[in-house]
Image 1 (cartoon, rainbow, N blue to C red):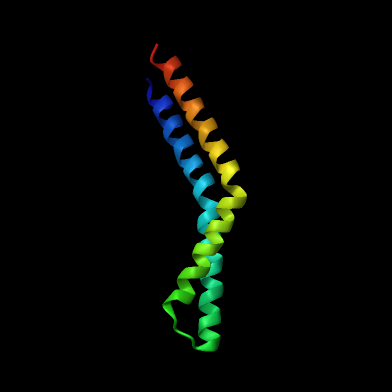
Image 2 (cartoon, helix red, strand yellow):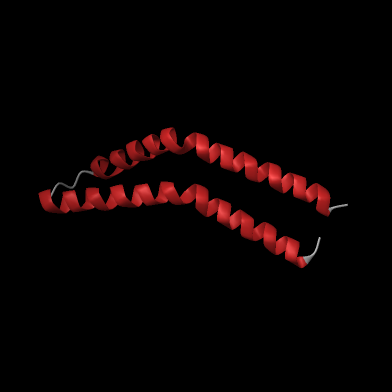
Length: 89
């Protein structure tokens, strides 16, 4: 395995991690900011009010994007494993 192969594998792993984790983090960030603004406007300081909407939004996102995320992860894993078989020869 050359240095370039190792760099390519690491770069692909980072891109896949951002691709799979990015939408979840973005939705949680948007919902968290919206809930914080709502709490600031109404002066309601309930801890469950900041926790439950994030969990519900993440669950909905995983229901919607879950199949795509799983397919992307499986495709990446198959690609990595097939490339490692070629590289080790």
